[in-house]
Amino acid sequence: MSSLSMREQFATTASDLLEEDSSVAVVLADISAAMFTRAAGRHPRRVVNVGIREQLLVNVGAGMALTGMRPIMHTFATFLIERAFEQVKLGFTHQGVAGVLVSAGASYDVSRGGRSHQASGDVALLDTLPSWTVHVPGHPTEVNTLLRSAVISEGPVYLRTSTQQNTKARPVDRHGQMTLVRQGSGGTVVAVGPMLDPVLAATEGIDVTVLLRLHRAPVRRSNPGFHTRCAERCPSRALPCRDVSPMRGRRPRTPPPPSPHPRSATGRTAPLRDTRAARIAIRTRTREDPPRSANLP
Amino acid sequence: MPLTSDKRHNYQDLQRLMALQIGDEEHDAASTSTLDVLWVLYSDVLDITPERIGDPTRDRFFLSKGHGPSAYYAVLAARGFIPIDWLAGFGGFDSPLGYHPDRNLIPGAEISSGSLGHGLPLAVGAALGLQAQSNPARVIVLVGDAELDEGSNAEAIEFAGAAGLSALTVVAVDNSSTTWAWRGGLETRFAAASWDTTRVDGRDHAALAHALRRRLAPAAPNIVVAGVDGAS
Image 1 (cartoon, rainbow over the protein chains, first blue to last red):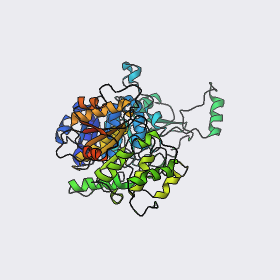
Image 2 (cartoon, each protein chain N blue to C red):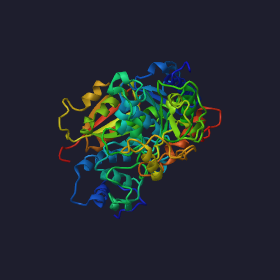
Image 3 (spheres, each protein chain N blue to C red):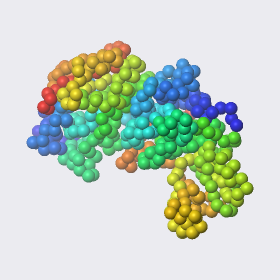
Image 4 (cartoon, rainbow over the protein chains, first blue to last red):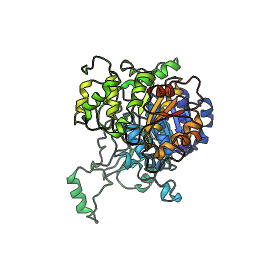
């Protein structure tokens, strides 16, 4: 088990990115601010703590993106996505600019905090918007890889960290494909992020394939033949079976990687004047190294 | 004098440019309240031209009060950012000129607006982004007095004052349209957050130009309240 939490790894990687890339900014709303004290001292104009103001958190990031920066905005998942959802929708997607949203406190991490801190709706909300990539790492090492690829990309990304983590990091597929963890023949279970270890434990001795998914996509329910067969065998026939992949024993197709160009809600590509070209200009003005490629590493 | 896209137009042409969009009889209160402020900004204040909409050193103007945009479109057309012949199609299905501006369809429009209370926080972010890049460009955002009801503005006002974001200017067109009047005047909220404040007649071009000019060595963001008649 890693000694770091995913949230601590996020702060470490983000601080490194602030050093490496002058187009990166981190925007906070008090949560995790103590983890960025050193980075804020070194880069006071690129670490911004707006106080307990989540609407401002997201729109400050969006405003920075309008000037060509690559902002990383962070707070607890409910406040980041649910409380500030109109800012995500209109500040980013509708303007046609992009940034990286990173949350802590996923799902039921803070279940003892009660309903206000339970974050089960964040991904569902983002699913109502086009183009958002969702990363769900299961281990701090995966946080490092996924945050770096998120920052180097051009599109909007939501990275969801949890207090729950797997014992081992897994290789992160650069094209967003699922990873085969165990091969079986009696069915397939897809484990998302930190659910891998519980799934492996639950399927111990059962002949199923286990796949690890670190990226969001809705489970496909488009194979009616499969559901007919499943319903015949399933005791509660009223419920559609949602948790088993229709592709028994085979890796299902996954969606293509997100478009490199931010798109507005109207589907038109945003003019490049404040996006990729400006970001490269920011980096080359302040560093001797050549600008990074926009492709995934 | 005919209205064509191959020459710059002046203030007297704006009524005709608006009439192309919304007809002679319809004087939309929301859009005419901003007309003089917008004209002074684009003719006298903003360091921006149609040729420089991609220049990172240009001044940024954010129209946060996005409803009733025909004055904005008239000014953009008069200054050569958009073709005159787009105006007659205003609000049409295929028109780039919608009932609320879309930055991805209109050359020179820095933000898409429509939901009140977003432009000022976005402007705070833009000012921070420019400051992080040591870019001296200004950010000027136009809001309405009733728009400032939205709580998202309060977040932006308090933070920008505390952060001393001196590249940021708010111009608030005050036509007394709030449901609950701003006791003491809306500028008192800004003054409490350490902004510089001033109030001028929103139809006096000389006063507007003077109030909105680039300040020499500002230490704080500033707000110019442009008062106009409640009926306009």
